[in-house]
Image (cartoon, rainbow, N blue to C red; front, side, top):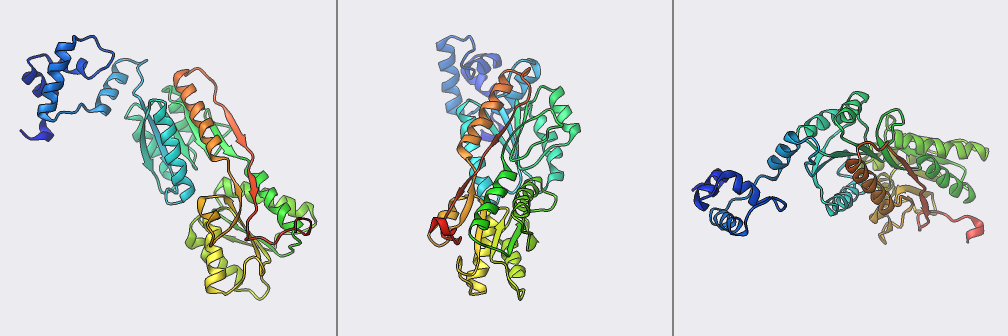
Length: 344
């Protein structure tokens, strides 16, 4: 028999039971005698049958409004960024440890989020996490009406009925500026992640505000797209000038590593003798011996635990109001920066 064509009907026929008995045999809480369950399981093993978990959960959720499907949607952009790859892995483990399974959708841009969410809703998901992107007001209202809690990770949208967990981006920018100012830097540049991205914008706002407070102004500004290549290209533009920056703050570690690469290996510059460099996120590669990148660390483990707890709580108690949590970052000082005189 073709294994792909095997159905519960085939199992029922071999075991000499009804199809409903097969369904109950694969439901741990269902009422069925142990003898019948054993016959069904033996027949299923002989035929190589496995029930379709997605179909079963969708059927239960559709026929019983209070029944959970046991699935959580996860939408992520920038999956190639190690920060988000690690976040997805840990978030998935945490949610699965609570008894839910993950349906992962990757999108290339903000514009694709609504379409991905529309598809996920067809699977009768119990909740959804959106990483580094937001949904439209229309889709937020649709999820709210359907009783599907939404939590934004690394984004916020106060005007929408959704929860959010996010780093204090503006504060992180201030931390970077304070350290560079204390180090005596004068020609300070910023590499943005994306001019349309709120995360990058907030980091830049905090950074520039602190410079202005100290009587300085932003020396140069470049824009990337959170990739190593865009960081490398931004570094080439920054240091091709006759008057170069003596410090650079990037909206992400990945772009900082691109700047570091071009400075050392293409322009023969010394870091931190020729300029200081700060990133944001504190990905594992920031601490590699060949990088030693100073960075703003996100408390990822605490943020993911909080996001998981909020989501589970709202899936189990749909009447709960959305919650917002903000976490402070920490400046991790490594060898890519010239130290303030008082720290030497």
